[in-house]
Amino acid sequence: MKTLVIGTGGTIATRRDPASGELGGRCDAEEICARLPAPLSSELECINYRNVASMEIGPSDVLAIVQLLREKIADDGVDAAIIMHGTDTLEESAYLCDILWDLSEPVVFTGAMRGGGLLGEDGIRNLQASLAVVQCEESVGRGVQVVLNDEIHRAWDATKGHSLNPAAFISPRSGIAGEVWLDDVVYYGPAHARHTIETDVLDTRVDLIRTVTGMGVHHVEASMQAGASGIVIEGAGTGAVPGDILAGLQAAVKQGLAVTVTTRCLQGPAPFWPESRDRMSQLFSGGLLSGPKARLRLMAALGKYPDMEDVRTAFERGGKYGC
Ligand code: DAS
Picture (cartoon, protein in one colour):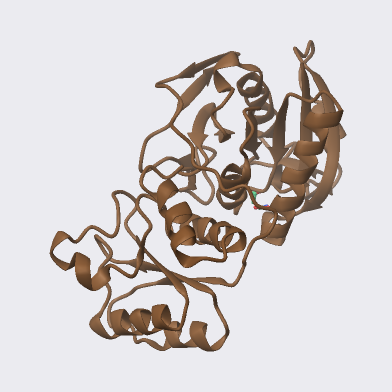
């Protein structure tokens, strides 16, 4: 077994300077892996893709990482991968990777909430648990997962729910997929069907707009004027938006934009309005996806398909169950 470990930066790559006590130094992937307790049950190959805070990582980086994984699997005998990533945008990179990942080899994104050398640092344990997950036979075919705090989250649902606590990640819509008990990996159910979109082109001109009480239509108009090709609107509750915003979204559809409705609620689907289905029928359904995740799925669907009906089908196929 050969596991590729890719470093991108984030708190997991930080280290406290023993002299000053400051958290600032940055470790490369090899240095982080060297702190794993021996013996390791897999050969590791370490690659430093970048060493930055996760807000500096974007969709094009995920495309490049997926390409790298494909090459390593095809040419170098790699059969699993761990991506170490800052936790702030980890859920987005992991889900985009999951949308693009049509192979069966297990991929895990992990990170840390407490930096190296701090009391209660969690990065090395998260890496160790991730290694147990990617090496587990049952992880094959489950796509991309997120492992932190001994919990396994499906990428489509993983959400950073706390800004500081090491138990930061939650899966609010479906619950965790499993746990790591020391070295044992336990899944609580079978793998879901997955609906990937294999593309190496993303249309990144997709805006996310959150609905709040009393808001006007100017955000929608600004998106249209800026040349967006898609808008994800996070409605309230089951996807409710004020009437003038709905009219603005319908105008956007007429202008050729793909418009998707999600909910700003943490749980449950959107849109879900049996009584107004016709009025909303030109808008795509975000299903169980959060706004940020729907945005990434729409980027992939728009990047792959020129025809809007194909975009809709590819987008909505993954929305219902998120994956
Ligand atoms: N340093 C932040 C980031 O890169 C937070 C973290 O990694 O936990 O996302």
